[in-house]
Image (cartoon, rainbow, N blue to C red; front, side, top):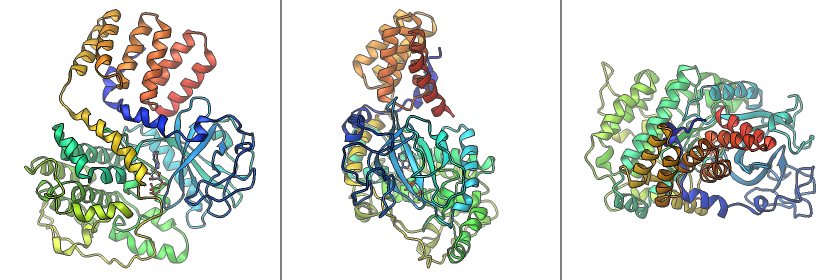
Length: 544
Ligand SMILES: Nc1ncnc2c1ncn2[C@@H]1O[C@H](COP(=O)(O)OP(=O)(O)OP(=O)(O)O)[C@@H](O)[C@H]1O
């Protein structure tokens, strides 16, 4: 069995996450009995999960008024808990796997004549993106057609609910891993002076953290581009975080079904989108997106992060580079996302400004705080900010920032559901408070963990158990330690203790494929075959 010590960095869930998971479990999670085969709760008030809930008829899965799923609806083996938000094409729901209680996200895209003809291509792209196995590309586990009033087959995996695509009321249904925050929530939290001060007190640099996040976005995009995949809508809601330093880009294939809104829409796509809105389909938009338009969106995301979270001294050297990536003419941008980041990151690292701007020192802060409370991140589109022309020069191509037209009024600049609610911000706030501590220099816990790993490698499993327990005495919310402890007990053939270690690890990090797989192995050894198979299934989903 592989202890996966080398994967320690990816085991990133926080102690707060574990608490939040319990605290935020909905009544549907706590009382899962009473689920009928029709997919909705028995003896319950039937209501939809929309912003304003409406009563619904027993057995109805989709609300006729707002198109949201019924509270507690069961789709195959997944039970829907709550609405996470709505995007350009559909709605995202938090759901749980009925047997393992694993949290997942179900996204439901209603039929819509502008994008439905592209669903097959979107499904293919989502599958291709998942096969890249890139650590910063969120894989879609399953992407099927689904009919609300068809046979729901509770207990079946989602892909077995697939129906032949023909009827008009077919929905597109996707399943992916649940993560704990998106970039909008991250920004909303770190704009707060207290959050920045808490980081400062720990000696953690928010700027360095942003570098880590941007690197991950760049790496995911580069890998996708190398495989002829373009994201097409790199919006903050599609950039997901685990609360520490892990980031995923979500919705490859799916995000591109609808054009992004300003300021993320690259100037070269505006005419196509305008025409698409007139003729009633997004097929041309689907075809004309390019790696250069992804680069443009990444530049917008960078500017959003810098202006909202850093002091101007911290990002002033980086800004011309960002503006070059957001040139109105794609041929004036960098040759690739890699080339962009190659120029950008040294400029960010070399700045000497304070790592933790306060409201007083950051001129953007008071303005952006207002934006946080109400709507999507609002910031000036790079290419339209004519007053801030870039002076960045790259190669022989002079930097030139062009004003773009901003008369794209057919797309909303803010979307319902995209702004974090105060409870989401609060949840994220608690989580992040702990999380960035991961950037701290090596601690006694790290030392004990390393010692445990060495002993494990030397086959001294009893010594390893002792070392891991020492580490856990200092920090028993670290999932990697519980996993390692489980491995050491397994090696000693102490299966009950091994199982308990894996279960603790999974409480803290339910998306750890290795912990699921190891739990399966120990259950197998204990003769609990059926439970073991469920664990393997979960591990495979997470690894696929
Ligand atoms: N896998 C996930 N884990 C956690 N939250 C998610 C996940 N996928 C989506 N969300 C959140 O659910 C909300 C709605 O997501 P959805 O994808 O429908 O729209 P969006 O990402 O905000 O915008 P768009 O789809 O238009 O690009 C967003 O806040 C998004 O961050």
